[in-house]
Structures are given as C-alpha cells and as structure tokens.
Amino acid sequence: MNRKEITILSIITFLTVIAWMAFGIYHARTTSTVTEIQKKQIVPLTPTFDTEIIRQLSKREE
Image (cartoon, rainbow, N blue to C red; front, side):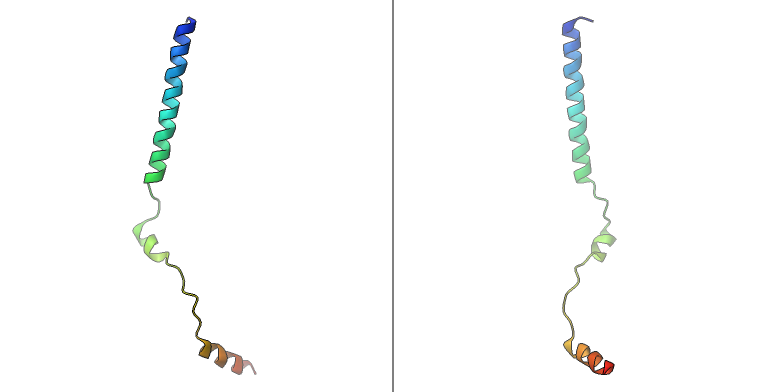
C-alpha cells in the first residue's frame, strides 16, 4: 500500500468510529430502562408529620 491508500483508509476508519460512537450515544439517550410501572412507583414522599400522633407517642413513653 502506498501513502495515499493508507491515508484514505485511515480517514474512512476514523469516520466509521465517530459515526459508531454517535449512534451509540443516540441509542443510549433514547432507550429508557425505566418501565411505566416503575415511574408510577417512584413518587416523592411528602415530609409532613402528624404532630398530634408525635405528642401521643411522647406521652406514652412517660
């Protein structure tokens, strides 16, 4: 192989690797591993406390 053929082969290989990485990143971003059931189950907890129950429990310890 001469220098021109090696250069062309290197450019084609480089472009193939870049395209492969781009498609891999695109696929990873668009494919979700979280199911709809899991999305429904993952809800934030509300940090509200019933102060009356806490008072009753503290009286119970005394």
